[in-house]
Image 1 (spheres, rainbow, N blue to C red):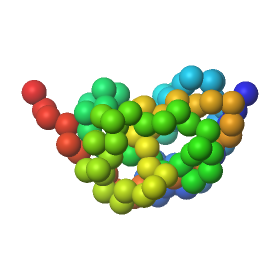
Image 2: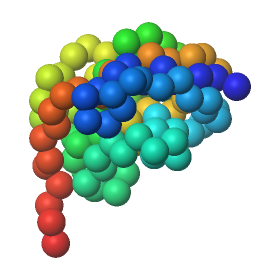
Image 3: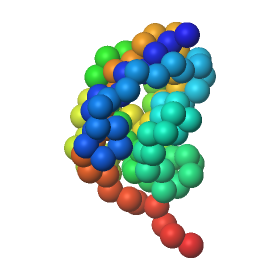
Image 4: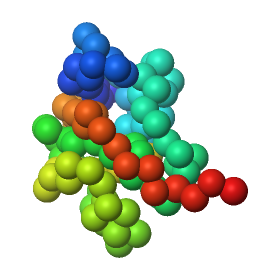
Length: 111
């Protein structure tokens, strides 16, 4: 079973975490299932950037991002080449090291 290492984040995961993941599960779902409350204003519909993360190791094992995800990521704070929306990045059989940025920008519309 692959593992995701979440690097320490002052508010969400101060000590960091090593979590088991299921293949096909999103990085966001793994985090939420284990009490790491990554914001996801659009309810995982790829319509905001609040769940932006940086995949420090294992990035190449992830399925390529969609055009819609890439368009959303262009609006993310602190965008890096290894940036993904955690709601869209699905775990494969490789371990990942993930950093949750200090800030996020909420682009979701509130109805």
